Amino acid sequence: MFNLDNMLERFSIEKNNRRFRICNLAIFIIALSIYLLNNHYFHEINWFFMFYFNDLLAIVVLLSFLNIIYPYKPDNLWLILIVTVLASFVWEYVALFIKPWAIFDYVDVLCYFASMVIYLILLYFIEGKINSSI
Image 1 (spheres, helix red, strand yellow):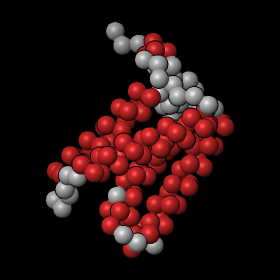
Image 2 (cartoon, helix red, strand yellow):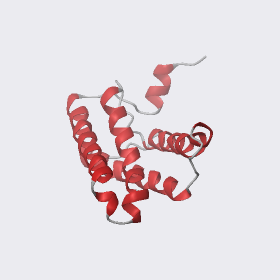
Image 3 (cartoon, one colour):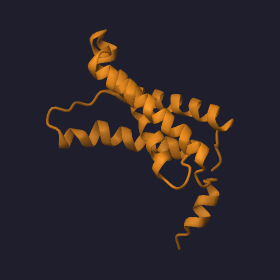
């Protein structure tokens, strides 16, 4: 039988606290502001800003948003990896069936994982540790 409490305990998921949510709100606002700046100004600099810079912000925005609205802290390394893999799958594979002009780009996937590393680094500075328990 499925036991949510046991799963939450196993992954060492704890409840979000106010400080953690405020830090994630700041990360979300900064990353979203940089995203908007890229859409209006930076994309003209070169091909990296035009095609890949927003992908480098995608997982940071997604995870900070989840940590703002979700009552538990999804700060476990393995959960973050699962979210990144699922987001990459949806944004790069499922999108092919939804948007006819979409194309698969492995560099986008690399940017998503680089974005995950950036978020893990930010998480380390917020929490002082990376939760890697299974």
